[in-house]
Image 1 (spheres, rainbow, N blue to C red):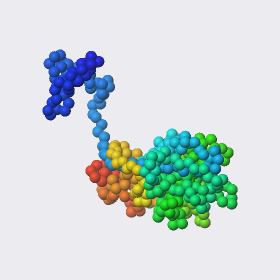
Image 2 (tube, helix red, strand yellow):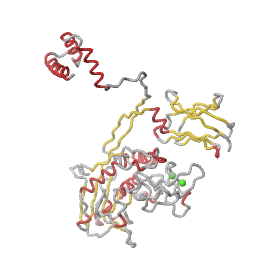
Image 3 (cartoon, rainbow, N blue to C red):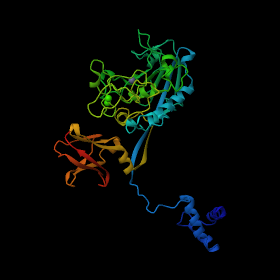
Image 4 (cartoon, rainbow, N blue to C red):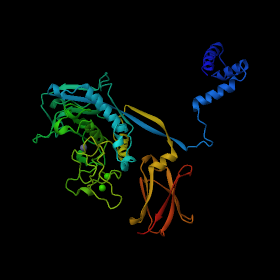
Amino acid sequence: MRYFYLILFTLTINFAQAQIPAIDRCGYDQVLENLEKQYPGFRSAYDKAYIQSINGPRVLPRKLKIKDTTYFLDTIYTIPVVFHILYNNANENIQDSLIFNQLEVLNQDFSRLNPDTGNTRSIFKSRAGSTRFKFELATTDPSGNPTSGIVRKSTTLTNFNTSNDNIKFTAQGGDNVWNATKYLNVWVGDLQVPNQGSIVLGYAYPPYGHPFWPNSSWVANSNQGVVLHYQVVGRNNPRATGALATSKKGRVATHEFGHFFGLRHIWGDPIFTSGCSVDDYLYDTPNQGSRSNFICNFGANTCFDAKDDLPDMVENYMDYSSETCQNMFTRQQIQVMRSAIKDYRSSLPIKVEIVQRMRIFDTFVYNEVKIFARNTNQTAVVELTNEELLNTLTLDVYDAAGRAIFQNMPLKRNEEIISTIRFAPGVYVFQLRRADTKKPVKTEKLYINKS
Ligand SMILES: [Ca+2]
Ligand SMILES: [Ca+2]
Ligand SMILES: [Zn+2]
């Protein structure tokens, strides 16, 4: 084999140098033909060896499995970040390496490439996803000059006041924002709650006008951005000791970036009302009555839902659980954040890449759609755990005799609830088809009764 390859390689080069074929851009076929004339039987030996080299020695299956593959366009946003480091002493002037690994943590967490995705409980795995956001340090400053994306500034203030945002204003001992519509500003310093002496790990404001937030939380561009306590920036910050020891994974930033892109806390921030009646407006974060308190309690279940009760999602970055058990954003949270870029922060990305992604449709649908009956509620549910499936599928329902109950119902919501109140008790076939080709992609038999 090696012998043939060597000859081919040499001849190909010679051929390419000797003549320039007018139509064939590659003269490879002619090389093979010449060799066949020179060494009869060469071609079949070569073909056999070639096929083996790409397929391996195994015998091809008699029927090749045909996969139903579709392609779709996806957008990846790259967002420039500037760090303003405000320090009153050398310890607060955190080293570059922490800023670099903070970026790495953000890129992993927002892309679900974090090393601990395996810790997501199986009940929540299908709800987790990637934002397709990338973060990079700014390389050009607002005046168009090259920059490292890190601004360091000494300050006479021993700590910053979280209520007046002084860290964001040069005249008040902080550092002015870089155009908040073009940069994601991160300020780092010693943060304290005025008159309480307690520290704040970080805070951020949602996009101006975002409907999840009361208008008291909408602030001007000069105040837009993320603020972090210097002790919790980056992974394994040596300053994160004592009470901060559970904040060593750089996930305060992940959480605050979540707010910056519009997310609420998953427990919905009840203050004056009962916990379980206040929501974060997202159905794929289970209803949660109160925040986790820097611990990792997989037994937590602060709200009992009458149907399909789930425990609290302590894995979520938008809880206050320990960073050791945080490892996911949900797909609805991702939808909110991606919409926030389109609707409120559209000039922020420095790069918008349109990429083609492949979907093996059958596998995809099979794994990301759940069809089940809730007989106690006299309903059946089709749950799409991936927002990309919205408006791509239709539902047919047939009774045991094959009679259609209804057909071509479009699936427009992540959770489509079908009343079964008029269904006679029995077995029904729920069939999903692709809306475009009408091809069936998933079928489930459900037993409907009135228990
Ligand atoms: Ca929720
Ligand atoms: Ca629950
Ligand atoms: Zn928060």
